[in-house]
Amino acid sequence: MGSAPRHVLEVDDLDPGELLQVLDLSELSAPPPVLAGRGVVLLFEKPSARTRASMEMATVQLGGYPVTLRNEEVGIDTRETAEDLARLFSGYGAVIGARVFEHHKVERLAAAASVPVVNLLSDDAHPVQTLADLLTIRQAHGRLAGLTVTYVGDANNVARSLGIGCGLLGLRFRVSSPPGYGFGAVDLDRLEVAGARPEVVEDPAAAVAGADVVYTDAWYSMGQEGEQRERREAFARWRVDGALMARAADGAVFLHCLPAHRGDEATDGVLDGTASRIWPQAHNRMHTARGLLQFLLDGEG
Ligand code: CP
Ligand code: NVA
Image 1 (spheres, helix red, strand yellow):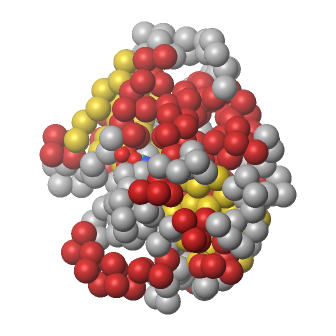
Image 2 (cartoon, helix red, strand yellow; image 1 turned 120 degrees about the vertical axis):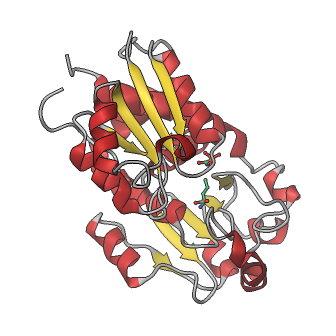
């Protein structure tokens, strides 16, 4: 690896051609062992099931060794600085992945690392989720450009990365959130910088009308558990149920990054219904993690 490693902290750290290349690599049935004999270091400040397991599995599938550490062990900025941890783990792993609260922590890890740093979710972004979302949409509809994706619910990290991914690959992106829970000016600016122009439609029924993909996420994210009660009240009209799904286009699919709070943001009928692609989507986390690692390591010599 040269002096300027390639980091993926948000989806638009990949250009549209590279994003499509990662999706194609994710579908390879016999990926080359680009990690043979090497490690991938995974740091987690927040809990994870899919991200940890998919990154570990992808690492093994490419011939490497995953080393996963919870923040109780590493203490980013409490036991030692993010920069010192980046320098340390650059010597152990071919790639560093990190799930953090404040986004600036992955930026600081990346600034000090001499290997690629991948954002495994921050309060602002969830790019590795978007890779799986886009692959699942492509597999469901056979194409990406020109489709309409409607995100219903909290305009959070998952929504922002999804909006950027849609913008990069020519999908229309609509977002419907309760007052006070939509994208703020900073998020809208960030989306615009990435070339994404979300259509903000407050009424969920109008937002879902004719959509090819209906997407939702938890009403309260990790770290917001104390806001459960007021959020449940504010979001009640934004629950994805059968009636809302019925407004989508024929052949529309339902996606959710998971974990789901069943009965809050989506009903069991939708999560387990015929339009749901949540399990292929979750399984695509592993395939796209492998595609991304291969993209970052291919040709590095
Ligand atoms: N979707 C997702 O990132 O799930 P985990 O929090 O379980 O990793
Ligand atoms: N928005 C959620 C996504 C979990 C995968 C969170 O940040 O907790």
